[in-house]
Every structure is written in C-alpha cells, then in structure tokens.
Length: 301
Image (cartoon, rainbow, N blue to C red; front, side):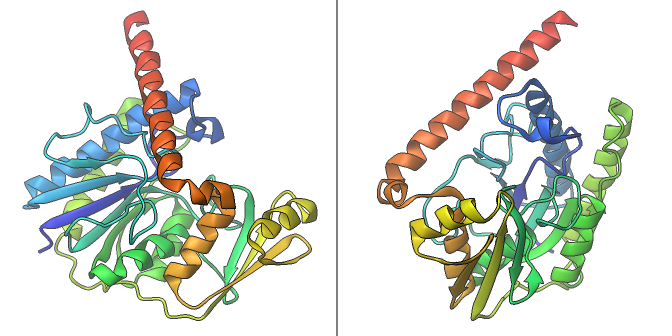
C-alpha cells in the first residue's frame, strides 16, 4: 500500500466552484470556493491517514497557489503553497512520495468540460503530436522521473474520462453536484470522494507516466492571430495564424516552454526568483482577503 502521498489540488473541479467567478482571484465567490475546496481536501486527508498513510503533502495548483485554508485542513498534512523553481515546474523538488492524487481537476482546453483549460484559458486548444494534452498528463509526466505513480483523480465527467485515457487503472471520483449549493449534497459527495481516495492507496496497478519525445505542440490562441503573433515573438516560437508551434525533445522541455508562453516574458524569466517571491506575497495577501470575506459572512449570519 502507498504510504507517502502527494496531492495536487485545483479549484475548478472542487465542490464550491460553480462558475468562472468562483475560480477568479479575489471575488466573493472565490473566497467561498476556497473554503469548500479546503473542506474537500480535509475529507481526503482524514481518509488517507485513517487508511494507513504516513505522510500527505498538498500542493495547491490554482492560480496563485494560495487558495487552500490550512486551518480547515487536518494539521497532519504538509501544505505546499505558492510556486517554486526546480526539477518540476511549480513544485520544485517534490517530496519523497510514491503516489500522486489529483483533486478538484478540470479537463483540457477545447474538451467541453466544466471550465476546461490547459494552464490558461488563453489557450483555445493544445494538441501535442496531434492529440489533446491535459494537465493530468503534464503533472503526472513531470513527476515520473521520481518514480511517482498517479493513482487517483477527481474532477468533472470530461476530466475523468481524460484521466482514464491517460493513466491506465487510475482510480476516479467524478463530481456531479455543480448545480447544487446545499451543504448536504457537498458532504455526501465529499464522503464518497474520500472513500475512493482511501481505496486508491491499495492501487498498485498504475505506473509512472512516461511520455517519450520528440514533441510538436500546436497551441491555438483564443484571442486570435495578432495575439498569437505577439506571444510567439517573445520566445521566437513558430506561429501559423492563430496557432503557435513549439518543438521539444522531452516532456520537461515541452512543459517549461508552455509555462514560458503562458506566464513569462524574457524579462520576468531573468528575475524569476524575485518574481516568484513577489507573486507568492500577492497570493498570500489574497488568501488573507478571502479570510476576511468569510469572517464577515459568518458574523452576518
């Protein structure tokens, strides 16, 4: 049985995210979604420890990386907030674990899933070697050199279908309650997800996801040809109309090239240690704002 676990968590596939505003930084709906996301994760963490896990690390992977409220989550878990440089984009050097669980996930750009996107909503579609690529592939493949097996995935129905196609034998938990706002519905769903997560600790049928290159990525930009041209010119990537083309020899090179395209400029890349520090401060400040919103709602009720 897997004993040491890494959880990557997003917000779009969590129980409190019902629309785009719920995922958008520093909106009142986002503050509420952060609380519900934290409750989702708490349920999973408790179930994992009850099932025999020895260590659980949680990586917040939505926007700033500061969405989870640690005061809601079982204190035995280790929180990995914000983003770091290192072997794995965003995570840095991963903790010593054998298994990866992904919660609150969304489907890939152009898939039609709930708030579907890959890395950013600016991408209308992402094809790699002619096939759509999702974040479950990027996350799992980037962790494969460390022998980490993806064993559990939770998200909308489309996201779960993508995960099932990507990782053979992965344990799935689908969220169907996006149109229900009552706490009882969320609690029932959480309980089911937590049971599935605990059962996945005995899932020894998956393997680290190794994706072999070379890769050719075709990134269609939602805002059209002009924006695509500007984005590509920053990094001297090839561009064909509204589609940017990136060639990479391995998955790590591809992943970093996509991060460059979506989030960085050459100047920001040069000052990345400082930039990451400032961005993490920004995220921490946003989480404090969310706490104030939640406190004011609690006092008003």
